[in-house]
Image (cartoon, rainbow, N blue to C red; front, top):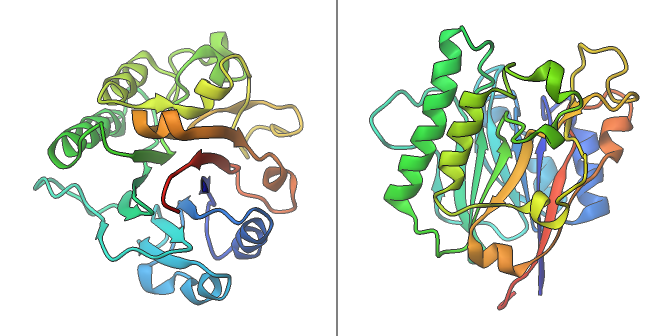
Length: 262
């Protein structure tokens, strides 16, 4: 059977609720991972998603960050921290096993500026993910690491690689940190299916008419282990939500797989 999952940084789930519900109705993924829900766990509109046929697994936080996994078939096992003894106050990670696949949804810190302490925190975040994966999982198992990873991996993934070189989101240190985590056993699924496409997932509000001028970045990703790479059918970006009224500054990325047993 075909299994479909997607990721979407909604930039406020309550502000974007109608848009997310419409997208679910139109696309019917088995799993949708959300980032930047910007609400406490108890404030998440779980009832609205339940009415639409989705169980919500949520790790919220007041005003900032926050991640959630919406699933047509709910899970009983949910992880929401690295459990490594370090500070995990920011709601940036949630993972669960759904339909035989581990789904890891993360919202990686933005990093602010290469000279800011937040940049080192971002680099360490990738190292923490790598250690956590090593400690909990095996790359031979079906696992998807998805979300707003806040890094454009290659020149093809930004609108102006020469001008943006060295900026946060397109910095050599970030590229190295992401590549190190990818080496655990991941394939960039969009690039597997579209090796030469210049396709973006984020267009900055602060840049005038960035979407209309296609001045974007590909920073929202679906990374998969080898079993899912082999099972993948397609991976694509849905541009439509970004062109709507009062949109998020990101747009969904989705993927389909041929999975046995569904």
